[in-house]
Amino acid sequence: MTIVYAFIGIIVGAVLGVLITRLLARSSQQQKDLEAKQLIETAKMQAEAIKDKASVDAEKEAMKLRQAIEEEKKSRMKEVHATENRLEEREKKLDHRSDMLDNREHQLSSMQGQVDKRNRDLQENEKKLRKSQEAVEARNEEINQRLEEIAGLSSEEAKEELLDSLRDQVAHESAAIIREADQRTKAEADKNAREILSLAIQRVAADHTAEVTVSTIHIPSDDLKGRIIGREGRNIRSFEQMTGTNLIIDDTPECVTISCFDPVRREIGRVTMENLISDGRIHPARIEEMFKKAEQYVTQKVREAGEQATFDTGIHDLHPELVYTLGRLLYRTSYGQNVLNHSLEVAYVAGVMAAELGLDPVPAKRAGLLHDIGKAVDHEVDGSHAVIGADLCRRFGERPEIIHAVEAHHNDVEPNSVLDVLIQAADAVSAARPGARKETLDAYIKRLEKLEEIANSHKGVERTYAIQAGREVRVMVQPDIVDEATTTVLAHDIASQIENEMQYPGQVKVVVIRESRAVGIAK
Image: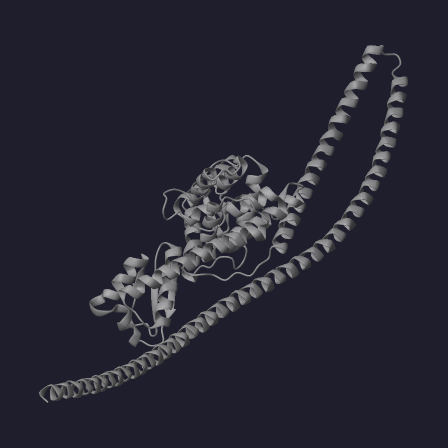
């Protein structure tokens, strides 16, 4: 029985063990299923989070792309507007050139009438010449009759008397012809010169606006002045050190002033300040950032101005450094006249005068465009702007005749060609035309008084008159003190003293007049 009970116990234990094992296995499977469900739920939540994050990132990226596209669109529109403006300007220039060509055709037709008139004058002169020949033949007949009357003389004596008579007559007639030809040549040359100058001035007539040498910037309110100065002046110090200009902030309402000897630096400072005012954030780091942007902008504008000047004058083979230096003249003024506009006027006037004289207008335009290029760097280099400009042209491979014309346009060297004289004349025409240069009333009156004072300081001067806005001085002298030979020396001395003691635009002509009068009264 014990064995049976033991066997039954073993069987029961085995059954219980199997049941317990199955229960434990089923519990473990349920635990695993629960953990799997939790893992699946966690994975789903992570997937949803990743999906939401990817959606947000995609929206941000799309927003950035839209902003980039909008900025590119704005940039393209600005370029399109700029191109349209340039096309409009070129269209206006083409219309202006068309009008100039029409005027030129009209002038050519009038010149054709003058040629016809000269042909008629030549025909009349031929008739007069034939009459003169007939008179000479009659005179020869008269001489032959005299020879017949004096037939008693020897052949040598008759020949000698005839030669003396003819010599006196020919000398008298030759002197009269030479005098008449000289007067006619002078009158014709003066007339032609006036026609050429008037034609050149008419064809290159342009409006001019006087410019100042400081830049005044408008600000929205005076409260902004404190932000421009900054705490303990750090902003204004940073601005002046960065731009190399002087920033003047005074009691003048709603404006600040930028001053500098270098016109390009002054323009960079102006653009920097306007950008800072527009942006509203003024601190040293922002000043540096705006300065770099303004420097790039002004550099590009200078280069475009030089390229536009060469395009307008038809000169396309200048050295790039000369083109850039020429563009710097856009911000340079002389007596209120913009030097780049003045250089273009000189180029046009010189080209027209050269064409009227039958010369090649291209070298004249080239020398006229470059004649004042030294003014772009004359605040950096010592010496006359004519000499500085000639050195620049020589350094960058310009032809010798162009270099000499640039150097001689203010007589720093002696003019030795027609091109030199043309550039001097064109420079004087552009600088002296009404409205080209401005001058205050006080300075104008002082300049006229100084001219008269210099002339009156010389011995023998009776009265002095400064006329034509100070471009001519007429000096009346006492005839009993100053003789004819001394008048030339006196005019030269007065002109030299004016050159040494005064600053003036263009040229000053000194005319010394000596007049003697004798008065008698019959009663």
